[in-house]
Length: 92
Image (cartoon, rainbow, N blue to C red; front, side, top):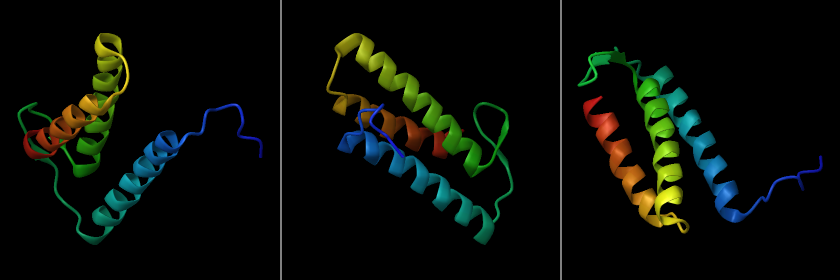
């Protein structure tokens, strides 16, 4: 399979591996220890999988905003994304 159409750099590969591993870990966690949905500050019922999706989607927008305002590298955005994800899993 020819994958030369995309710039498969190490950060790009690490990003996709991280997403895949996150989904795998969340799936195993949901099977081993099912959790009831809970209501957070958004006043909607969310499961850990929902919170993972919200944190990934929000992180994408944070990175895009960072690129628009500051350009690359996006190491600062990574720190902001980690703080955002922790907040989502804690309070959403």
